[in-house]
Each structure stands twice: as C-alpha cells, then as structure tokens.
Image (tube, rainbow, N blue to C red; front, top):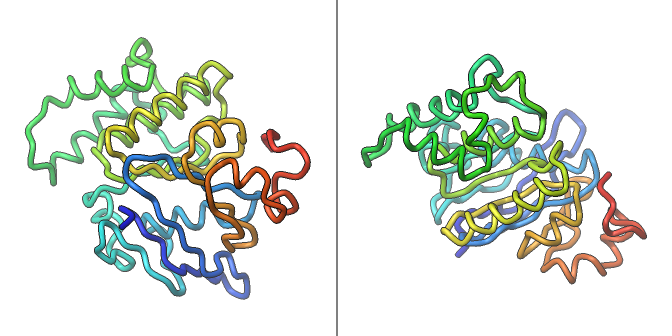
Length: 245
C-alpha cells in the first residue's frame, strides 16, 4: 500500500473541471513525478493533498487513513509538508530563522526532544546552504530561497514531501545536487511527490511518473515508458523530451 493515495479526486471551480478523477500513489522510499502542461491541475492537486482546497469528490489517504476532510494543520502534524511554485519564505527573516520557525512549530506535536538551533544548522547544511544561514531570505537569489523553503519543510520531519518546481532558479550544478539530495531523502524513507518542468531533472530523479493533462492522469509509469508514450508526446513532451518550458 502506498504511503499517500490520491483516489479519483475531482475539483470543480464554477463550471471549470480543474481535476477529473485523478488517482496517484506515492510510495515511501522513492521520488514520484507529476508532470503536465501549465494549467493541467498540478498545483490544485497539491492544494487538495495539503487541505488548502477541498475536492468536489474523491479521497486522500495517508498511511491507509482517510484525511480528505482533515484540517490542514493536522495534515502537517500527520507528516505532509510542501514547498510552493511561488516562493513563500519569510523574506525578512534569515535562512536559519525560517527553518527555526518550522522547528518551533513542530515542538507542538513532536514526541522527541531536540535542540532547534542544532537541527536548523544541520538541515541548512544538508540542502547545501549552510554558509548563508544568517542572510535574510529576501536578499537571496530565487534558487537559493527555494532551498531555504526545502530546509524549512524538512524541519517538520515529514513522511510525505510535496515539491512544486524546486529546481526553478537553480543552475545546472545546483540542480544536479538537488537531485542527489532528493534521492538520499527517499532512501531515508521519505515519500516525495515532485512537480517539475525540467524534464532532464524529472527523468533522472523520479522512479515513477504521472502525467496530468486537463485535470486527468493520461499516463503513468517509469521514466523510460513515459518518454515514449504517444499520448504524452502529443500532450506535453512534443518532439523534444528534454524541453523545460
């Protein structure tokens, strides 16, 4: 059984069908991809998983327990964390202070004891930005600020991590390092659902990929199958499987 199960989820905004019976399994210990054109419904699906958007129909299960109507803060306590396509850090705080916010919030439900400052430094080092820990986030490049968001999300000790275009703003070397980090986190047992437009990054990082188009999952499978799927080629990849737009 998958750690996170999205089962036949539909969302209707007025007369617009944003999600149409979408089903995805996210396994612990691997990176699962979610790709598709702009407007396909990827961020809406993330919002449903985290409780920011209630589905019109369908179910969300975490470790076999239905959380479809569970409040968003309780989903965080149960182990669901995310980053956002549009950056949402605390810009007036330093990178370290951003992570400390998550760690102090986690104290409300954590059973283990920990030194927040030590853990914050460890997380910043792990995502590769330890040297800029004391810089305010609004002074950082976009790609670095995304890594602050990743460290902050990890501060809640999640079981499921939803990443919305985490490589945006990173250069090639930084993107490669992020891919290595995500695979390490997965090997540690984390379930990762990745939304990303950089197809080279997706194909090299994800063990399994779902393709969303007009709110429907039109294909799912390992990267090698997705790359040659005719419907995926027509809907998204086109003739250049490595394109990033």
